[in-house]
Length: 131
Image 1 (tube, rainbow, N blue to C red):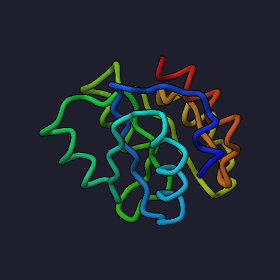
Image 2: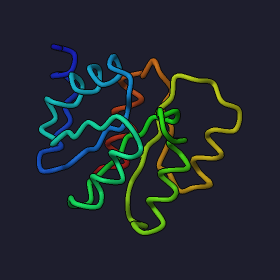
Image 3: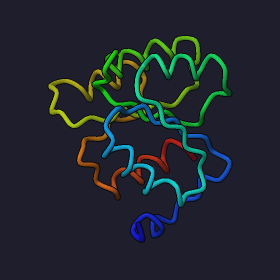
Image 4: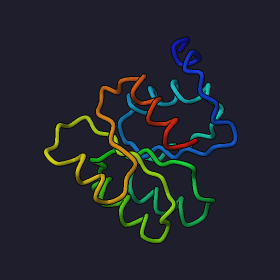
């Protein structure tokens, strides 16, 4: 956890929604992002994301797993962004999927991170997207 505190990022007042059903990924992201001061909301599937967005303020960022139990994360993000064009979304995946970066770009996502997540690359992308 001490590595997380050395990131130097300050997302106080920012809300980040993380949609991922993988426990290990959720723990990693919690340890990495908690010291940033961001409000972190963890959801497990596409249904929970839709319900969350219906009743809560728009987050500053959504991190969404590409392969959710009930949805393709990139396509779900694209659908959500139709009614929320300013929404910032980054996809994450543990799979090597041909054309995924192009698909993310086509649908307006801000990037795609591959697991295992490289902490430095991830933080660089977060700073670019959230600030």
